Amino acid sequence: MEVEVKLRLANAESHRHVTTLLSPFHVITHRQHNLFFDGAASELSSRRAVLRLRFYNDDERCVVSLKAKAVLVDGVSRVEEDEEDFDPKVGRDCVAEPGKLGFMESRILRRVKDEFGVVGENGYVGLGGFRNVRSVFDWKGLKLEVDETDFGFGTLYEIECESADPDEAKRILEEFLKENGIDYSYSVVSKFAIFRSGKLP
Picture 1 (cartoon, rainbow, N blue to C red):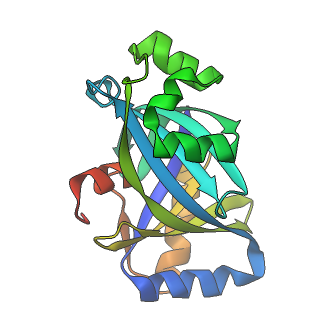
Picture 2: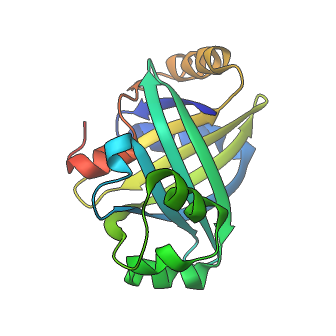
């Protein structure tokens, strides 16, 4: 179970303010391209599951992940997540021809076949995706991921923080944002849900 605090920043100015304040604690910045897939008969989405290929810094790395049963309440997200590394070249081939996912050697894709019944050459469909610039900071014992997500129809700014004690992490983060006059709100839907809706919340 992945548990994360998710706080939405009001605009580009708030995002810039946060990243400037946190700059002494910067660890790395990832340029991510997230692409999503479903079964041809909506086998995944009908059961609140999401299959994603995430490419880092073009094709430096690719990770396949399966998320299920996501719940987002008061800025705290809980989701079952399973992920593994995937050959980036193979990943790109699957983006071009989603049917190839059905024939790949992968623990996660085997789960999709066994648990959701997505099989065969015509089993998968590509849903498209979005790009994200993720700046990672190591701050006060927390790993903060500050995102600038380009959906094509708008840009979302968000802070994510995975934590075993989300209430405490949220308290520390909210205190920091309030002290610095940064406008924020609790995230109410996942990035995937925003992408599928075609509009910013």
